Image (cartoon, rainbow, N blue to C red; front, side, top):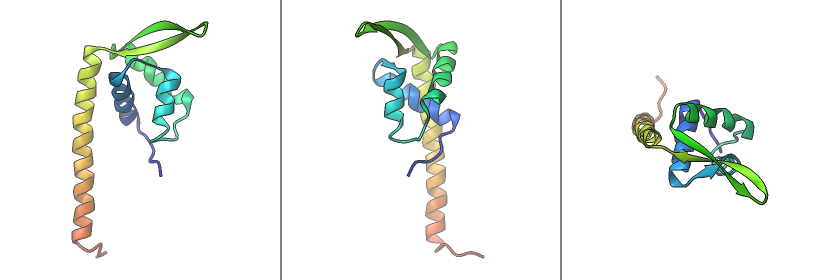
Length: 110
């Protein structure tokens, strides 16, 4: 099952992937498909936004006679990823607390 992806989570995942290695759009979209039914066309506005905010740097590289646009994390992008990751961890913890409390209450409806 895949859950809908909000823009902030998408930004976090894209930054996390680019932190691992310089990547091009199609490569990023394929990795995101493991957690989302994201359309490729939805990714490119996020990449543009990250570049405008200087969280990623963009460069071209030749591949089989064509240029590919690669994205490389910047220091501010790394910091943004860390901030978003802390927020995500807090969110997950809050969700888990709700789930645990519903289990401990026996799921009774009052």
